[in-house]
Length: 69
Image (cartoon, rainbow, N blue to C red; front, side, top):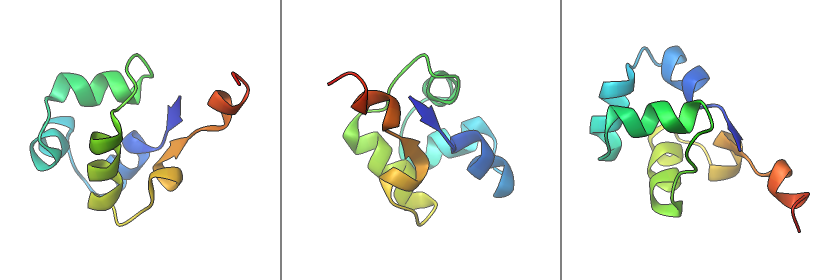
């Protein structure tokens, strides 16, 4: 699943570790989500989107999941 986390994080001058602390996860999790090795849980996706004042759909691209149905 594609996402805009890295782009948003850099625009807000946040390191992976800083974002992880803000949303209550580890830097490794943020790294894995950014590179597409891990899909964020709904709760974590909400926390990330909420931090950037965006909706989940504005941060995460679900179009590839629509193809799986």
